[in-house]
Length: 426
Image 1 (cartoon, rainbow, N blue to C red):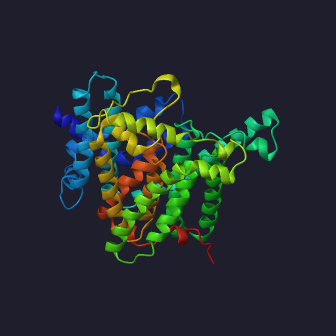
Image 2: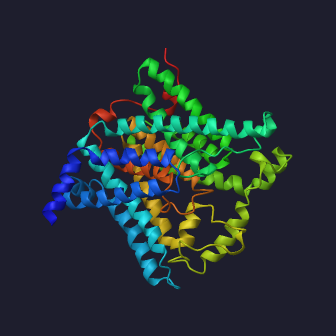
Image 3: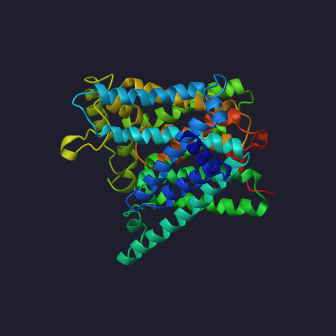
């Protein structure tokens, strides 16, 4: 039986099935929203192929267990899965539905060996992935804009005020303004990453695509993602000023912390900011209610600090939907160790990405990580749940950042800072 499974795996691996499945997963998350069935199926296939890779691919398994390569990252992600299992077993009352959330975390974990196996079999895999991600993002943005125009046209709303009264909802698995913006942000970062290596004509097309995605994100009126994109661009540009890897690592960790801290500070200062800049409670000036939510969640965390209240808990009354903060959310749902494990994973990815030579992969990883740290400051209460766009804007950059030390040399031959990628060519 084992020989049959191994033969089955080898036949698929020889056809570059790892990379193909990742491409399909990206496409379904960005373009398909049919009840989440298609996306959920692709994540299920990702889990199966990931497990087969761990069992039968000695090179991938060796890299994951090598102390000089990915063992720290493997231990951290393994700790996430173990702690979730302990929570299911120990937490009272027993919550059997929490096993489904564990399945999402397993899907996230299996993305790492698939990316590693794809990279080992195809040195150009990451560059190809960025091109596909960007093209799909442009397609998703274009369809979203057309649908948005049709919706407005039916109601006859043509003025600027009426335009911003209706928030654009991007197509795809998220079916949500904020989460959909996150997926488009990952595509935006992919475009920035591939821009420097492109030919002159392609660079112009890429700039047009970047503008298309940016307009779509702005029309969602999602303040968190818009701010996070700006912070990611600034933080990555600042990091490019440091020439030694040691200084970049230290600066990268500080910048990641600042990307998280600044949105939190803005939420705390929201009453003063709105009094200064807003005259209505509409559009970008609508109340966030984050302060009230954080106060309620912080009080409840103290009651279950170690294993949390459980990932399927729902607040009564509907006044609070979720903790609206990734660190608070992980502590609230799973306990303090889960939040620390998540921060450990982020720190490992930042260190590896910041220490790497300039490359499209480093640009994409750093932009995505800085964006995600800003994003989780006000949203994404559980970064280990949901078959959603977090696979694109959070875990894809994090895993790629962790893999940069293993990337082939031809991927590290081109500098790709956001500042350079946005400069027009001569």
